[in-house]
Image (cartoon, rainbow, N blue to C red; front, side):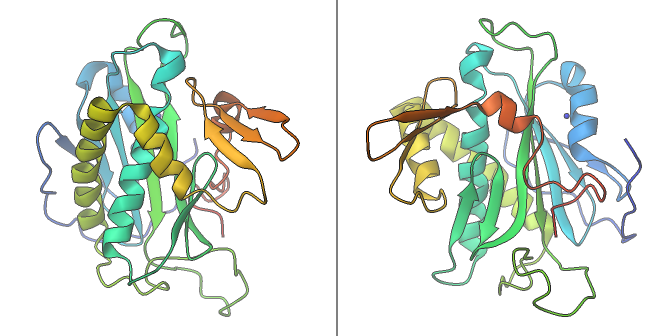
Length: 252
């Protein structure tokens, strides 16, 4: 502070990542699954362990957290991680290239889906007690591997297609780690409301609706007539909106 074996592109592992304290690196080869592996070892390894898969086409990683608040509010760590990842991407994006979110878990660059995040917790954890662990996982499409005709999949994107000049997945993970520490510090100093404001500022068009995030991490959508719709974060995280279950990567 989580199958089937996926087909992976075989590439040499890059040098070890330069991570700030208190992160500890655990590298997997290209056949690994960072999120699944992190869930398996979370109770033994503890907070700060970062699992990274050595690939060139995807930035795939997962970090273990040990929150001090009850599970029902600790799930808001999803938004903290997303804000950190959004900042890491923005720091490497071409000028004025928009980075946006689809609630609760997908990430877009200039409207094209590049990936998203996941959150896991112990299956039998008590909602009113701090969970033994959380695992925040992320996957960003760095290089487009589809050889089809350009424009056939206009809703999907990769960082190389969007003009990013630093396409090293490891550098993105390093940047995320630093931004995550800064975002947690901001949350401790100013409260979760500051994180919620940053997350909502990147949320896709609301079409006249006024979104907010409540204490449990649920999305509240206030319509012009005053009606409030609640969208459960637990239900939404059960099936990541951005993940293709057949390929194990971001949807094309």
